[in-house]
Length: 267
Image 1 (tube, rainbow, N blue to C red):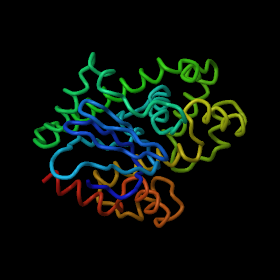
Image 2: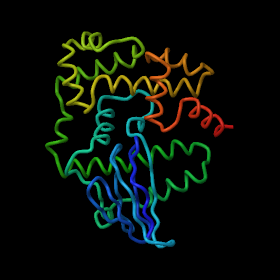
Image 3: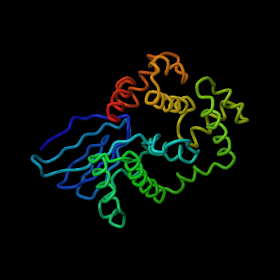
Image 4: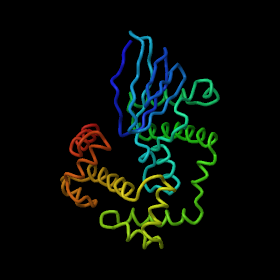
């Protein structure tokens, strides 16, 4: 047999079984991965895969960052869905056996993902995003059906409007604002705003602000010739070193390498 080393990622991973049966260690539990089975592995969770020797076992691997599944201006609901995927909630389903997916088109979607990634025809990035989003929607709906009370927290009433105002303020002034300024814009205290962020999109204010700044930094890396230091300052990071550290944690590579790789791929 072949055993991959125990490791973890800063992104979410999907496994889809094709042939043979692998054993997937996730945290302290072992899950079988047979043909047609799907497994979701959350970011930051140690895991490895044990496969039989030879070519007896194959599976598709899809890696993605939930928070950037939705392009452009994200609504409160889209952020909430993304952060649900970032949660590693005890008891939530990780393995989706083949028999529970037979009434879906999941197998076809994984096949199209592989075809689009290999072919890289014009617009393939949009196709990849669409297929992953459809798979994620199925996972979220299965989770919601199994635990309706947990997902009822997404209906926040007045707090939803507070989040909408706060997110709009952050998107417009992400480089310079503070939590107190955002709380003022939303009409609440900083402590109350912090609770709303945790309940509504399951993250802290500072983590959310950091993600928005990283997203803008990614755009500037690909659309300008500004230096890494200039971009770090433009989006609101205190130092270039801190920006590089956060970027490497999120993407697994430095901002300079990210820019070079994407520009080489576009040529």
